[in-house]
Length: 410
Image (cartoon, rainbow, N blue to C red; front, side, top):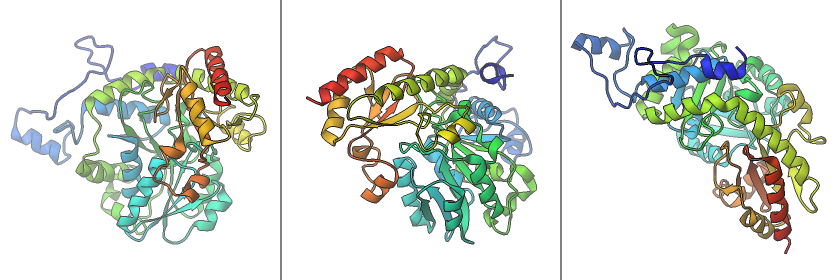
């Protein structure tokens, strides 16, 4: 099946006895069984089934299976949020004294989360550029993971997944990739060498801004050294499922990071249109970026534009698509605010991936808790506006931004 057909027809868990055309919502806290022995077997992983929604739920499982199939993963674990997914994806293999290498252009909320890891004795080192050479400089015998965003948010730097994975794997380190801003429409990181893929599925996977969630996907390809990653050692009997098994039976379950059945249901609906939404949003973003780059005193950043330093990687890795986010610099914070307030269609909101165009001033919001060095490294400046482009008619977006830019100069 091709991409859009796969979204609609692959890994769909239907209740065929009732004629349902959608995976039903199993909106229940617990599941009952005929005998005490049945429930005992499920709790001890000796039989398939569900006991308690914090541990597993059929609606959530259908969402996990759907995304894992699209991403070419052996399995996935859905979480209550994207932040939860990022956090436990790393904590599943880390312990005090370990180090992580991360890109400096990552989302502000992830920067805040990584700051919290210090309390656990975990050090995060940041590279200025997500290139193999820069990452290699920071690798030590304590490095236990390399974490990047495929398209940085909002820096919009693009990682060459294949090149970085080769370098990281030379040192037998897992490569963890946040593909929220790219989605499986643009790239399937596992096919290029990523070991673990994370999504904030609140964004493009859901598509309509009505459910918070995240998901962790395992390629099953990484050969875990159980002396180096000793917290995984008791799960080595599960073979290529060791990482997922530890996650599912341990940290994810015990911290209560579960996704609600209702949100899983909403995601199952949203993901069906991921392909057509992304195609339209990416095309709109490209057209809007070209239009804005011709406006006086406006600096535009979009990876697929000619002259952008990441254009070659975009062409190779994303077949020319540049994603659905662009940024622009208005010259000053005052001008940025005037521009934002003059827009009629885009909503001023702290989300991305909605069908509606969303705009925000990252300096004063998403990176409010970051210091100046972190903001500069992430490409966040006082006059920067992030635009998550939706699926509106492009002529309407162009006209709206044009009038807002003119008003911002008054």
